[in-house]
Length: 117
Image 1 (cartoon, rainbow, N blue to C red):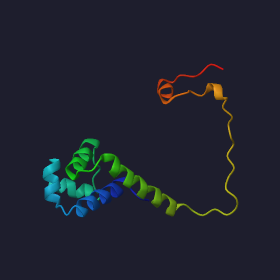
Image 2: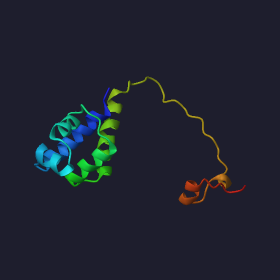
Image 3: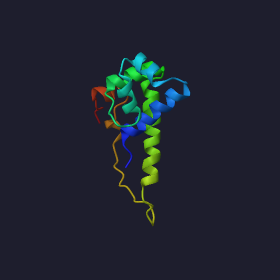
Image 4: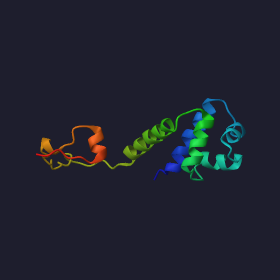
């Protein structure tokens, strides 16, 4: 089983190494102890959202970029771990939703509006 904290640590370490920066430089810029940053990179500690944002800022990369890379790695790991099933793929039941009941804009979806039939 792949742990999220390990994938996150791998991505952070690779970003730092690609920039040619040391743990000391990034830990100082993120205002986190060198030891703790090292543990996060090795997947031994869970980074809080605040700490993760500080590390990303220190690396000069958007948090969304880091999370996207982690997500891609996680998806790949999940695909590799899935057993191969024999036979056709399962058929999913389709549920018909009347068009009149679907909100007509993203804002309506956020508000929870439903259009009258």
